[in-house]
Length: 205
Ligand code: GAR
Image (cartoon, rainbow, N blue to C red; front, top):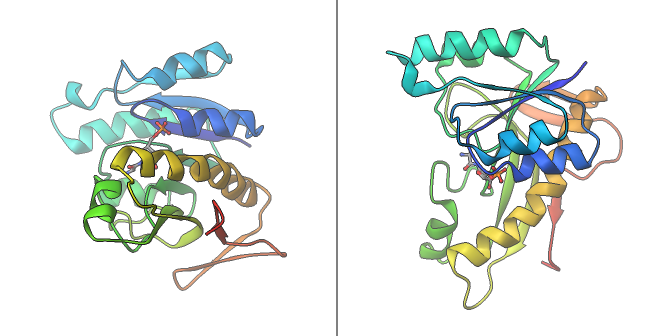
């Protein structure tokens, strides 16, 4: 019972999952040049490319993507830097078993350029969120979050790097909770069975 990971780029969260021993059965990218594909191949993991550009519509792309996912009959689909917006129909197909990591403390800063936007807004803390994916972009039930301080002199890059360290801890841990059957989803709220912190404060916040 394994995880299919969807990526579009670097794949550092994928690497963190693999290093943490998460059972990843396949990695699928919508971009053939995603460096994360080579990383997966080096570890002997099946890879596939489903290029969104090759399809005339979002629905046609998602039909191909879903077929590729379902070949592996995963228990969980994990988005790790997968930069395509998914339709409600696609999300419904994997309801309750598709998760994402987002580089902000949701509900703050959904969407793109989260680190620059946090700086521009004068935020004193920032972070990342693992959540179930629902039809509304970056608004699904929150599984876990990690916060870091925003420091004087931070740039979007320095802040992103500080958050990324937390992403690499948080995402494998949340996926492990899912695989261990510890997550309960009720009325849009996630509860973790046992004594597990759903909010983590990193870097001496
Ligand atoms: C990560 O910071 C992830 O949180 C973000 O993209 C980066 C991917 O890095 N995801 C999003 O912005 C989703 N909207 P990685 O490829 O090295 O894991």
